[in-house]
Length: 465
Image 1 (cartoon, rainbow, N blue to C red):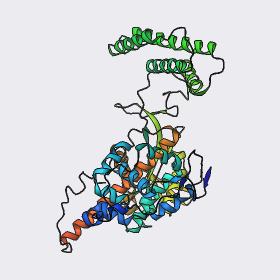
Image 2: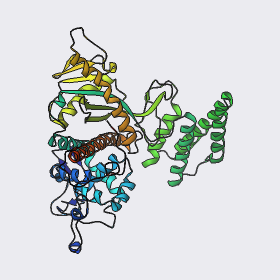
Image 3: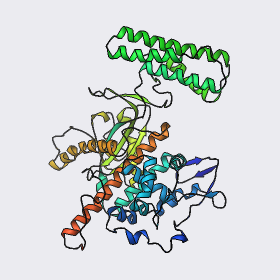
Image 4: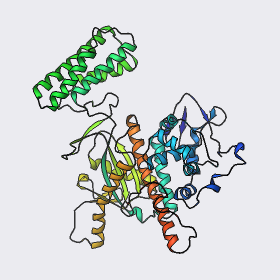
């Protein structure tokens, strides 16, 4: 059991880890060329690797490792760098580890001195590290990107005087939760768990349940709703019979069977207009959030609050909130998180009409609602009101380019971690574009001596936010 006073979390795990090695080198590579001698030092990723203060993460996360026993932990820079690259390039854990072996710039970015020909870690190590660090620790990764931007002069205190705040929905990676699908899935899981514990069921309804589920979908597609509801009732009856059979033959179920039995009972008893409904057996934290649009009436996941600077659109705060709160109730926590990450308190917050009900001044921050123009307002002030909509494309890019559109991480903590890392990926891409723009200006000022391929230097298109 280890408690981190900096992050504020208590961690308990079976295996203790020693402090990671400070340098990633191998004596067998002494006669090989170093990466800094092979790579193009004008490459934006190379320059960004030398710009980020990696010692900041070692100070923040070093208390999570023991000093004298346990196997040596992996370098903190490697783990942080892989998460940056994963969400900046919109790839999975498996893909980021596989591409790491093929890309020398990624290896230099993660702190290696020589080219690596083997995988540095198993992809599941990233999962375990995220669980150890937690959402509060992941905020340090977002803070690292903001501090880098501040060091390079991309973010100043003047930028943080005015921020845009908005909310969106982070969808969970679950199937669309129709009643028939939930009945069918719950029955299959209960039958599987009962077999694992040696409970002999009177009937499993594998064949009948599958047939009824298929026919329900066909009838629903053909708009034969009476027949569709009849097959749905069959699926519900089959689920109820399996639940009662297990309860008769196992008075005190334990482990996963008890959890799934309780969730299946909720699905069996819940009605259409009930509150706090269960939409997924594997992800009970999923909520139904009404979008109010024709192409997508509902989204299943959790609400996410974003804070970006009105000027230059840097993300300085992002947090997933559960319980489907009213947008206005998330403003205080969002501004507090932005202050903790950026180090300065925003003076003006521009929000849409979903934030009605907040006071005009919230903890020394003036709250401005969209399209609420005053007669005494000057043209310069109205300019910042129009800039509020600049957060909308940021939300679109964070979803489509940085893995917030469909969250695959488990639990409520997974929702919070994925949202924060999506913000990190967005800021990393902005830092790379800022370096690329500097190289472009340097070339045309006559300072540069070598020409660089500006269109394909990073091997991908950068969004122009």
